Length: 118
Length: 239
Image (tube, rainbow over the protein chains, first blue to last red):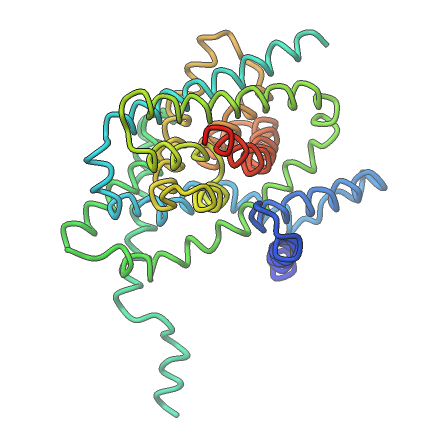
């Protein structure tokens, strides 16, 4: 568990350093995610039986299973934007729902169609 | 000395602990409600928790800043949790590699459709330009959305709210809609959740299927990168 948490934080740290150094508009944790996936993928490729270290797997599964909780603090921030929300509520609600529905449908359908062809 | 020791045991004053406890309790309650509703996506635990906490924060006339002083410890875990998505991704790397063409095409189409339609709808209905700009990057994971919004002249806090609300919308309607469109593959469900609804919709899919979780992780990561590049370019063209 301490090692697993160290791995996650280290990847985040490296991600932040890379972002700072290269002035990327991508956040550190996303760079860190691709970094860890590459390391784990490389490790699995060399020796599939070795697998992903068990503690890391357990910690990752625990965090992902409770991912929703982690969005609550930022989500409550909506109350601080009450003014804008009240003033432009119709374009906001319509734009939000419309673009999200379209985004889900287009991604899902294109994925479905292109996978069927192969 | 005694004072210092006291600080050692209670790095948090009572009030931030109250907000931390409230956030945890509200989400736990949201989970119970969803379980009672047999996992119905509409009973989204994130939405329930946000509404409960917001109601208490407003009723007690607490500022968002003082609420966040306690809740930031939960917020901090967003970073490590994003990194943790690498685990299901790595486990399914072969599958991802085999579907790279589909993933790339679907990602590009879905991402651009979501960005352009969001801005266009706000614009058409007479919303402020800052609102339209705040809408543009809202489909991606909150930290990226905030960074992009700041860069293009949106309101970062509004973008954060939209990113979370959009994720809730995608979590609630995504699966039902895709099934009605005759899309049943977990790879498509996962990718669509990750691309259009980031972490919240991904959490909904991930709780149901491992393959879905892997493609959702991929969708979040790739769309984060793509949006960070595409949105500033589109805004430049829009003028």
